[in-house]
Length: 330
Ligand code: TRP
View 1 (tube, helix red, strand yellow):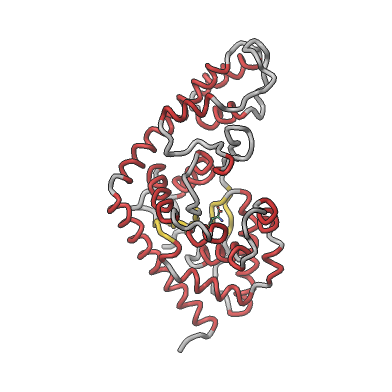
View 2 (cartoon, rainbow, N blue to C red):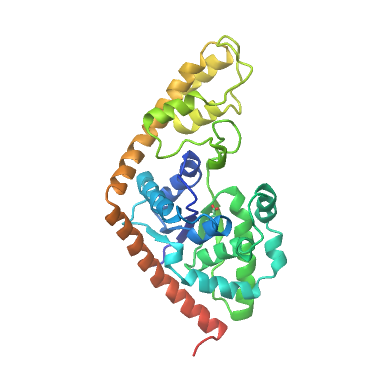
């Protein structure tokens, strides 16, 4: 019996927020049933851009894993591991580099975009150029059929498939072509209606307590033309209502708020109070499980070490197969 394998990873560059929850973790949790799921901390990927700030890396990694468990990733069902604890990622990456033309990497859209956007960072390294190729190694190492990712990552999976085809053409069919699986939820805007990003300071974090959520929601951007509650407002694309749609399970309440908002018959305070309550209802159990995981750092570490040992068993088998295909057997 073969179960389809999913593999996905996250860079440990800071605290996780609501964007990670609806853009990835909800999906990861759902995929645990029906798939053989491997989820990992992409710490080497964090180094591709953050090579000069490594002091928080391990702490972020453990904090992120606590968030994953808080959100419902079950270490008994999913393999949770750390990329750098499975050095086979690096060996496969090296072999993939041999067959990958540099222009294939230079034309990946995220490469150009991030090099321009993050002009204050030094992204001229081989490591940064190779980012999507390391990602290719991450998933092919486990014969991943399906890779749950956000839209921005689709070109990385396209590159992965191209590289796999080339590798298989040269050495025989030895690697599996991964397919991207898009997360169903559209991207959440940040509190200020820009892209949600830690660097903009416009996130609600999974680790925020209830009072912090209330405070942040109160400061959220809404329809700027509504300087008074009796002015009719726009619901479409208004982040407060985008969030209501995602986090408030009480459809009746949301529809009523929208109708009154458009009619100029509700104050922002009511809309936001109800939104904060809905987000807090969602985050409550996550916070509890997260706190419980962090309260037992030894157990948390053991989950990661055990998952990494388990991941490595598969990784070693794949590498054996790859070495044979490449004819590197002594
Ligand atoms: N590039 C991914 C991101 O930024 C993280 C990542 C690294 C990843 N390796 C992966 C995702 C392998 C899926 C599969 O979100």
